Length: 85
Image (tube, rainbow, N blue to C red; front, top):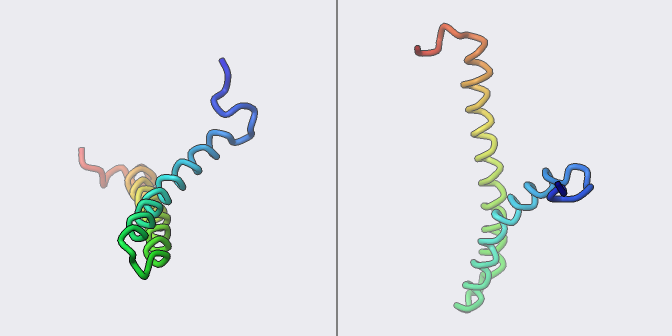
């Protein structure tokens, strides 16, 4: 069986990071193209806003999921009497 990313150390992790960055930045290109076609005076402001929103949206979502995991799984296992059963 041939590895998907070849002999690159951390190849899978790098692939996931690149996929997340692509998902965060791809809508910015669509907004840039649309704003350019409409003749907007603030093409770059829209584009930068979309990039920042996409990156921070993913970051905040990841922090929220991590915090929920910690609250439910880690802290919940420290105090099993508080779990509903």
